[in-house]
Image 1 (cartoon, helix red, strand yellow):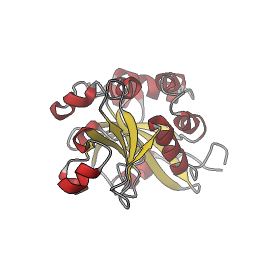
Image 2: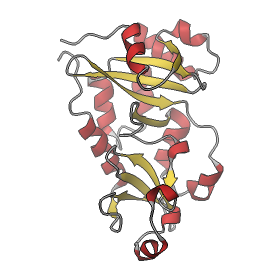
Image 3: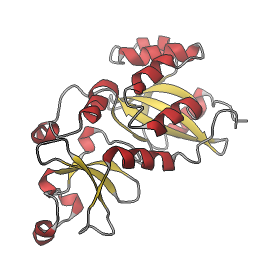
Length: 242
C-alpha cells in the first residue's frame, strides 16, 4: 500500500527539476500569497477534509472530452500542492506515485488572462472547450519534469513554420496543411506533436506532426488523441489502495 509522502520529500524531488520559492500544502499557507487563485484555495481546503468535490467540479466541464483525467483525479491523485517558483510562476501540482515510491507531478499554471499577440490571429479557430480550459482552469497541464504529455502552456505553443521544426519551403509547399496556421499544442515527450490546424470556417482540426515522418502529418480527432496520449502515459501510475 502506498502512502502520501511528506512535504520535505516532495520538495527534494521538485528541486531536481525546478527551483521552488514556496510550496504550499494547506489553505492557510496559500492564503498568505495574494496571487493564488481563489479556486485553488478551495481545493486545498477540501483536501484538508478528505474531499475533492470542488476539484472534480472544476474539471467536470472537460470530462466528456478528457475522461482519462477524470480517472486520474478519482483513482491516482495523491495530493495537491501550490508551488511558487523563483520567477514567481504559480502552479497547482498534482502529485501521484509510480511503483509505490517514485514521486511524479502534473502541473497546471494559473488560468490565462490574455491571449498572446502571436496567437490572436488563430485564437478564434481553437476549439471553444480547449479555450475554456486555458481561461477557466489551467494555462496548460503537463508532466512537470518534461513539460510534456498534456496541453502545453500557451507560451510554449509553436507554429509548424517556426524554426524549431526545420520545415524548408519546398517541403512546406507539398504539405496538405498551412504550417503558418498549424500550431503545436501538445508534446508527447518523444518528438511528436498534437497540433491544431486553424483554417476554414469552423473549429480547428487535429493533426499529428510525426518527427520521423515530417512530410506526412496525420489528420486525427483532436480530443481523442489528447485523451489517449494522456491515458497511455498514466497507465503505470499507482491507484488508490494499490
